Image (cartoon, rainbow, N blue to C red; front, top):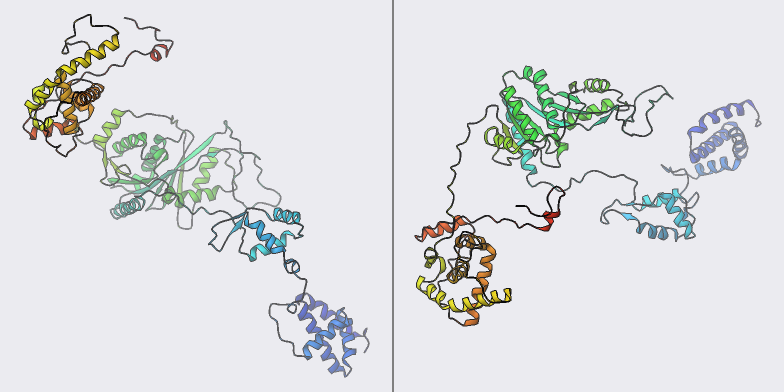
Length: 601
């Protein structure tokens, strides 16, 4: 049979049909098997059969002969391989042993991650590594670099938002409290809602993430830049998610995201759905974030909740999530994520389209959403006065025993007004009598010993004062000394007052303010008096009478001092000192054009 007979034509068609489904080694062995079978069937030599098969398959006779030889020698199967071990082109790192060390040196300077971890990554791109390798005289393509990096444990990966940062110490306890409150309210058949504001959305032909099915070549055309459009405006969806009913309610606002807008969304939900769904409810549990328009520090939030509680007759129990844990609020992964899915790849051209998109949100779990447009104006920066907050704290808010700033109830009916605190009468002006202060329990010395010490210091004390006055005036005295107890002028203390100031501070460790209140002078005068008395005692060498040790307690306030004196049988009344009047300074005189440059009478 020749190589151009009808049998060869049949074999050629068969080989052309089967060839695309075989890899190199399998194809070679198959042709060798065909040649051996053809030689046995036709009774011809193997060389003639190889020529026929090679001609029909369109390959060289060497390939067919090699396959027949491998079968005759009993070739072993090699799963997953098409060539024998060692066959094919050598890798670059095998040809050049210095290639891998050079790459490792470059990667060491740009490696990130934990050195103890199995996965690391590099901050340089493959092409940049290729260029740097070329500068070193090493020719290595980016594909070879990527292969060697994968073998060394590198991978191409993005960032993962898994680190929560600093956690509040009461984080887990607050989560447990919220779960307990939800269980308690649901068991009683009372409503539990999760509230929050979704991020603001710009109206108009703006890009939104996601993809949608459309005819090929007809994508939705939007703006190439997301510059805000003041005319189109923005919307702020505020959601109320009913945990038990798996129902969502969204109020789409066009004004500011304030606490008044947030509470009004809650009011609209109760009027349209909540009252009919829970007809016999007397309480409402609201879980929300710690910040934003419903933050636990927002005064307007509490003020508006008080008005809502009065209107509906509900006791509104509020539980805030700890700071930094807003993602655990149920409304985030039960309602808002599905609204985002409904809006994907769809520009929000008008407010009505946005509301319709929210209302069309459904899930296989049975979620249904009601959406309305709230076009009311909610001005920002609304202040709640201190008097209003005092009223709320005293009569409306019921703070919890644990973390009261996060857990509180808003009562529908105010509590009775508290009894007014009795106003204490004015303290007598002046100073405490020296005979009252000269007590063993207050000074640590016997009254006679303190009087003797003051008498011994009378002469050096007067001489020191006259010396200081002469040095300050530059001349002797002209007028008679003022009465230290006069109604006007600076109030001074005599030598006995100096000794009392020193002993009160050393024995009882009183502050300068309390000591000054007892002696009717300023705290700076007390500091000067104690310092001067110590100097006189050191310079004159007058022996200090024996004194009792300090009592070992710290009297920080005047109330502490009065209790200590009462225990010792002393009736001590702290006088009221005159308020300090600031001096007229040049800064005040020149601070404003509306004020005169010089003081007027």
